[in-house]
Image (cartoon, rainbow, N blue to C red; front, side):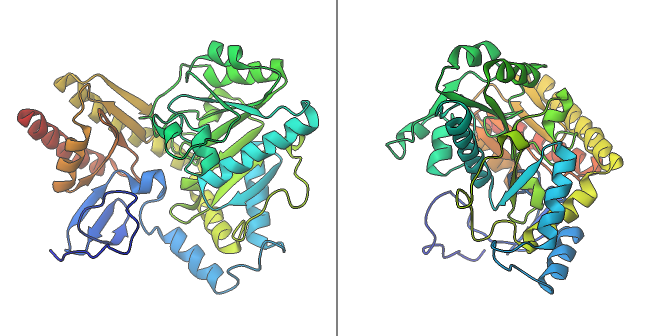
Length: 393
């Protein structure tokens, strides 16, 4: 193995001493020629798998025409994507960014501007403990990830945290200063925490009764990840503002903030960005929608997701783990003891990439095109890795 010189990179995350050089579908290859079965896919980013032909073709075709004319001009792929997402979501207008954190920043700014105009200057946004909305200063303040409130003080004010899945705690937190409620339909970074049935519908009703907006952060759960095109559609509820990212570009950086016309209140200059809605990114997103919007594709996500749930449940029952939870192709196992990092490392040594979302929790986010054979292979590796780690514990 060659030693990797990473001295010129800021140390923001630990990485193994190798370089990933190629990807195809559910697999990655490193600079030593070793193959890995990838059940993280860039944290649910590669919705269609590594180097999907649709993404490659969209990039190549659009790059020959126009990469970006600047956001001061319309471009055809941007207009097409905005119209398609509006139709698919039932919302009225879209703004495009490059990352999920940016999309959530736009949502927060839009809500606060709406509060200035329609709620006597209200600005506070209710979010939840253990939530994750991004790594900008504002979105770290919005997030409920433990320890983040001490990292870069002073934290931006205006975000009140309540228990996830508990509608009554949201109701108690609403005040004259509240402008919006912001939640993930399923908490991904916290370890795939699924709220009780009816949670989103109850929050929608609460928002209506209280005269505040509701924002659904679907950066991770959107774009077919949970078996419906958007996770909130399972409850037939419509937010005022919706954010999308990760799978929208299937590996290419793009995100979106969509809103009802009643919440769209930006003036010229309130929001912008150099790369926002560039034709290269929006062409890719259009190609992704061409794939994921079909009924057959969504049905297959549900079907293969059930196979993954079954495999994880069989292992969990046999090894007496605490819980298996998730939906579609977003799953986690609560191991009941803090061995997740050791299991993750053992899986990697055996050629399987999984995520340790918390010290006791493993998370699985494979390509939405993962096959049942690949799921079975992953379960075999996971089973062997768990056995070796637990035997040594």
